[in-house]
Image (cartoon, rainbow, N blue to C red; front, side, top):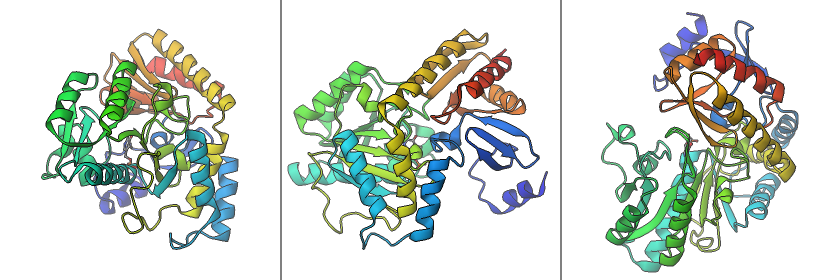
Length: 387
Ligand SMILES: *Cc1c(COP(=O)(O)O)cnc(C)c1O
């Protein structure tokens, strides 16, 4: 055991199962370990480093902003925060943005918007939130309650009350819940990420959106993992023909610095008033300056390249012996392998390719600008590891 591994194991809380690998630097989609070995990065820090490691535009914006003003709190105006909110609204048609620091915090904000809207408008019993079985919405006590996977709930009961889960695709079941519980909001991921990279059916999502509109229930889409170009459009909901009332996002938005955002549409934009919600770091100028370089590059031409790389991966991975199926959207891909996913990922790592898992699948979330030549190399390594 090298010394950093030992220090980490002694002093860092044991809440993560780490790979036996210490990373020290990188460039783009190549990571360098402490022993000098290089790895092709197909995980991008769980979908965070959208333009890879030390991306030049991102780095320049972040370092320049850090040298000018690294933080002032939300008591004052700063340019990067305002510009990022404007960019996000103009690109989505949403009206306002609340900034926090993580995906869970973005979902907390989304839920607060939905609850206040519905309770003010319809009465205090309208606090119930419906989410899907197999979803993942975060690790705080409220977003755990929203997460439709029982094993995350163990040891932490009682969670925030008022959350109900229904199977993805079961629209009749969902309507029953809405009839049974005065509903403040419905929250879903268009592609369930931690749940195994499972896209929802378009019809189901559209039915839910129509029901929300009909019943005046805010529709919340969790774009923490699927957002910011990951699925080949700016946000994944754009491929489902719906307009949500609330969008939460994080992961890829900051390109590697912590930022989360709640985008709100016309229905709920004026619901939260001064004092209703806040976050000390929210809208941090360094994080926002970095995020601007991410969002501004996600234009139609760039997103078309993301979709091309996606098609390449779907086509080539599906052909590999030992691969049972390939699922996902854009550069968010889940591979069902004959061998256990953990073994495949371990062998890929040995051979210089870093992949993730999600449930029983091998999950890929490469940087959106990963060069084709690295993707090709990585596919051949995955192929060897799947056999
Ligand atoms: C990762 C994730 C979260 C939680 O984000 P954190 O930044 O870890 O709090 C929430 N929802 C989805 C869909 C995610 O993938």
